[in-house]
Amino acid sequence: MFKLRWVFVLSLVILAGVFLTTLYLIPSGKSYPETYAIQIIDAGDEWILQCDIINNEERDIEYSIHVAIDGKVYRDSTVVKQGKAYTYIHHVYPRQLVEGKVSFALYVEGKEEPVERATYYIDLE
Image (tube, rainbow, N blue to C red):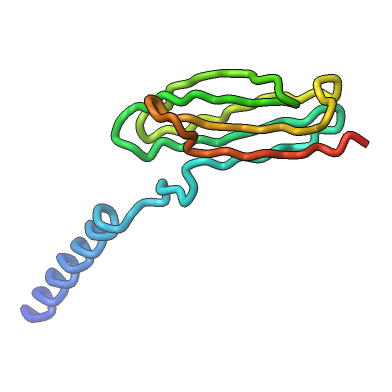
């Protein structure tokens, strides 16, 4: 009977060790494969340009956002806190479009080149 108690206690210690290893050493589900995800959504009477920004860094990051609709540039900026996500939305209305070209560029503070860019061509017919 004494041996069974030791086996039971030892198995509890091993189980606790496996549990703690799972909690602290295996990456959590919070890691994201993409830092930036850009899409344009057809909402019927308008288009919605959406960019999801995920800050995986250990510091807050300031972003500059440039959206060009047929050459007219709209600028915006935001700060994404460390470990947080931000969704940028820009509405594109049919009256704004002549050629149907929508370009997006995302800049990180202090960098000349965009970290992400995309161009979409919207069919006006």
